Image (tube, helix red, strand yellow):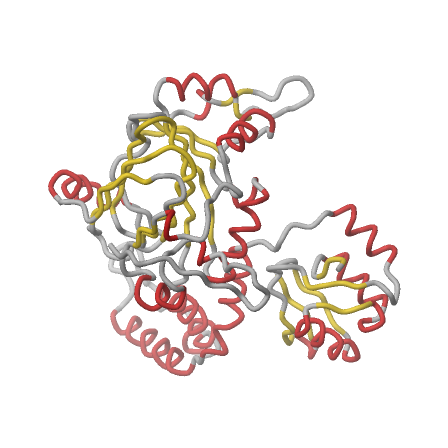
Length: 414
């Protein structure tokens, strides 16, 4: 476990970077020494401020009682097991053909009996966390999700386990006793859940001395790389903490895209497209070894020919699909598009991930998290200037293009 004295970092505009709210070491040190390697516990006294602006007990009550949350945006667990969804949800009543909305009275009953309430996907349902999580993802370069865990005193919602993503744990209210143990499976991939190593996890939980065993108070934050075992028990009243899951892009993602690119390239070879011999028995004897070697050689040749630029489009598509752009108001946006003229000022929508890319047929498209917009040759310079400066006017872009960018959600009114 690493701890250091407090620090304060600010951007050129004076704003506090999101990451520096979560770690008690400079961001550069975190990136080079801590990230994906070891846990870091940052106490409230060593951080710039509290997390009260992000979440609270009142937020929990509002989400459960009045927001009409449906599964899987909430779940409940007790003694390490998830409760049946029907036990804490109800139908929406007359005029709402929804069978799985949160039932505030059922949630209350289970919570009073010691169950933990999990509010999932807060990066989509709670506005302060939407902004915070998108900014954090932008700084880290990796997509994030946010859940809240609300646990009654003296109860453990989930037994020892590991996550397949890195996490930041933000203690919001109450206190929770955490136990952190080393991995039994180092750097698990997303398709390698802890249940694949259940026996090793249970043995470690019973026999291994924790790396960290301490009580978290409001304002404390723990960074935990994927694979580290952890469990927590609420003490001294109801505990609320946020878990920010960081779904790291790994070299395995690059490998997957590299193989896909190699297969596409190798498929141009007629020998790879040839049919297997008559009488091939895939169910019994399988493919002849000579056939396997021929395919292997073709793939190895293709792998050697693929360069980084061939991987760019596939990786960019995966990155765009993993996150959403900043929220916009559809009705206000539509009105702004209808009313746009040369005096209209617009800015690039936050986190829209827009780039100018070549397309089939010699065309050029503006690709982003909201889709693809074809561009005319005489529009390229104006769009390049927009992406560079982050803002423009209807006079800069032309009224028709300004309207198109507003209607597709690439830009928003300044």
